[in-house]
Length: 489
Image (cartoon, rainbow, N blue to C red; front, side, top):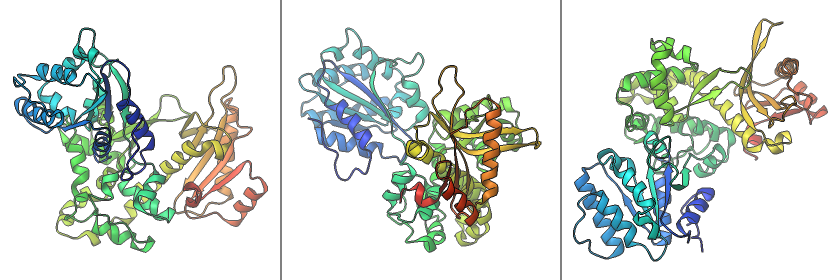
């Protein structure tokens, strides 16, 4: 029987179901699972709860030498099995063989957390595990359900890729992501959708920032948002103040922080193409290939393709706190350390509105289209993103903030489910609708099927009466979406 998710584990239902099925699998032989995700997402909390539920062994590695790590692992194993290890392990060969032989009768969960700490000083460890899981290894007669977990995304991503020893050995591969914007609002206890978005623009959906890093301090209402920013993220006395710096420093592949901070600052300030980033940091585009790849592998940035211009893509920072740090905090760090948070936040309001609020709101709108496209547009989208359309007649380019495309059908034009424009602080009117109509006409001329395309206007500031009237007359074709709609409230 699969273990029941404890009440203290918020959400994570899908993740728990996958982990519980893995831990209770009664099939023959040892099995391997890999769990990864950026720091502070609750991986350890989740795996500790699972181990406790099924009576498994949970071992959290630390930064230590191989000899000390073996001693700590031995102590954890002895406490769990209540059997003395004799003779002591000489190396990880002995430890892994013993582990698989120790638990042969019943399925037993064994979690090794912070696995990159071990593999960094014991580079052969993945190969040792691979050997024991393979033909002739002790894993064939074992019932261990082994989970390797870590936060160094570049290391964990490499465990199962390419020619890595463990490629093809894992029966579970789980990435623990931050909470989505809707779940994050519930987790923070925020009922006001606009306020929930503002908080999400700074701390995103990282669970640890709600409790451990702010001691449960959440804005009491819209009027408390500015004061909350000053007393939490901009306060040198809170862990949240230096967190963005630590996120970068914790990635093992980042050895020259200066270039990485400059790249992140470029993206945070709206320089999202390879060329624009190069111009900002003073490097040629080819010189940015390595830092951009490292940041992608570390899951700190992501590359988003332009849906209507093949070969063109833009970069986005995945952690809102890093965007906030690079755009607001980094340039005013000395003043913040002196306790001048009020003055820094007042001076940074325009930057926050221009460089953070708008792009983040667009991202939330795209998330909505992905999650609720089936009900909003009549069909589950195959792709959701943004796109640029050349308008030769108008000698301009039209930027579509939210585009949802249907699954392709061979020999038929690609159907566009929706084209959308988002505005955080601007009341939308018929002019915005006309832009979307023009975009649909240009795409139709390029052999896209736009006959049933929904034109979606996303606004946090509202819609003027004329646009509302048109939407009322043609509700199938025109959708007006407010923050309340995006949160289904």
